[in-house]
Amino acid sequence: MTHTAHETAVAAKPRIKIGAIAPMLALALLCGLGALANPRFLGLDNITNVLARSTFIATIAVGQTLVICGGGLDLSVGAMAAFVSGLMILFLNSGWIDNPTLLIIAAITLSLGVGALCGLFNGLTTTVGKIEPFIVTLGTMGIFRALLTWLAQGGSITIRNSDVRAAYRQVYFGDLFGLPYPVLVIIGVAVVGAFILYSTAYGRRVRAVGSNEDVARYSGINVARVRTVTYVLQGLCVAIAVIVYVPRLSSASSATGLGWELTAITAVVVGGTRLKGGVGRIWGTIAGALILEVIGNIMLLSSVVSEYLIGAVQGAIIIIAMLAQRGMSRGR
Image 1 (cartoon, rainbow, N blue to C red):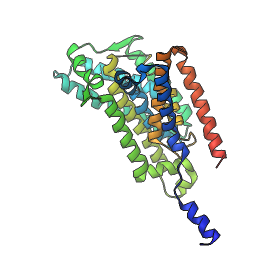
Image 2: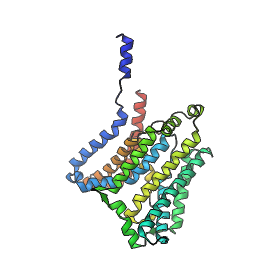
Image 3: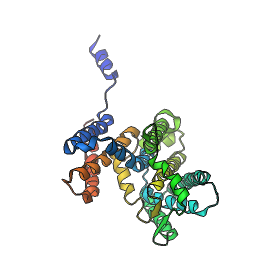
Image 4: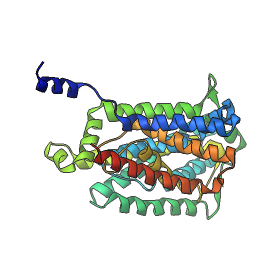
């Protein structure tokens, strides 16, 4: 074999992408540190609690991964979650359907529809209006939260019917063969998100648009349509998170979903998705969401760092993750 042929053969060998497995390694390391900090960390109840509590951010972050991979950004997800939660609870309180189970199913359907419409509004305003997604979603963040505050008259909206509340609680607190429903939701959303991004023509278009919008357009890809659909999918992910969140507290207020946008974006970046677009890692995002929840859990169990500093820790993490991404890109 000639020297050139040997180099070609070596180059053809698949390489392990450190960026793809780094979030999993970091999660494993954190779990080890958590076990050392407090023996209760590896207890079944604590692990189940961590997984269930990470459902909301993990679910929203999957949609955020698609949006960012396509070259967009959505800062309105927390406010959108609050708005969808308020509308859902108001519908549950309407009593239009006597059967609690059918009423809950109808409310879930409504939530999915409202979430999709909110995402569609963000997407069309960004693509048709040709406005930066940062500006658009910053605006809709204020709109959605103000609408919820108006609906709640400055207070909170609570599920009034005790039968509906009791029946709906199972969505968050119930389990299937010992596996909590929220964990099943995370798995299901991640599998669907990974399938869309990695195994469909649409997923390839999302990555192409995020990598180079002009090249994608010259290749015949409808950039506006591809980006708009990512926002619709983000809205659906927010609605799914809301469906699991509402039975946990049975209420919504202006504080609902506060800070979720920062946490979701942090999970996406920690998971290895590039903020500039073109690269999206769904499973890395799930690991990123778990990392953030595990860090918070360790802080609570160890009492070494105040739980009030969790936001500061998350902010530091996203800065460190961005510096790491820049360092890895320069090293290529």
